[in-house]
Amino acid sequence: MNSKTIKRILVAVDASQANRSLVQAANMLASKLDAELQALFVEDINLLQLAELPLAREMTYGSMSSKQLSLPELEKQLQAQVARIRQFVEEAAQLNNTKVSFNVARGQIETELCSAAQDSDLLIVGKNTQLTRYSEKLGRISQEIISRTNCNILLLQHGSELGLPVVVFFDGSQASQRALQLGMQLAKDDHDQLVVIYPRDGKQNLQQQVLAQTSQSSIEPTQIELIDNSPDTIIDALVNCNGRVLLLADEKEIFTPVQRQTIIKRSQPPVIVIR
Image (tube, rainbow, N blue to C red; front, side, top):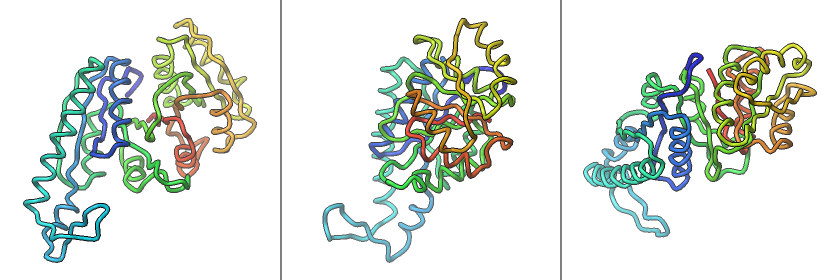
């Protein structure tokens, strides 16, 4: 995304119950932005290679029994899995009146997603909600994708929804200006609920840039200046204003990559990282 709207959204899909939240959020966002949605299921090549090993065993959930894991049986299971996911994705798109395509790739999950994201404006991936420690909620694959792709990324955990108010961290960078534009799009249709957060000592210098953009759309944002630029303060501000989605520029002047990942891990609402 340059300074324009998001028109191509890519969502990574799998067979988990948690993944349904991603599909629903992707459809809602695609409908709101009048964007095309692409769902991608990646057949993990590591699992397929494991099935070729003579000692590979398949365990049945809730049982101590096991059987030899064979490649033909795994291929059959994958085909059935893909059919179920495709049906759910298409039904969700029909319900939201969105245009969707469903694709299957085979390879390393992070590699295939990063490759597909090159032609997308926004990639949607999930956070691990089964783990209680914040440090573990952003899995290895998600971290790889964040570091390797130049695409905007929406990170969302199971049970979360894209709601209002929309919170934008604005530091004056080009990426934060794009974040503000997207935030205005997301907030405009429903009571103009937009909150702009400024870095410490930044409001006086930056608020005119924000007001110049928001005034053209008759949006009057709530404005908050942070007492410091720590991840804890960002999360506290998000909670205090009841923010339902955080838009954060991928810039290194305010936050280090580690600090940005801390914000993403700790945020209960979805986070959109704007490149």
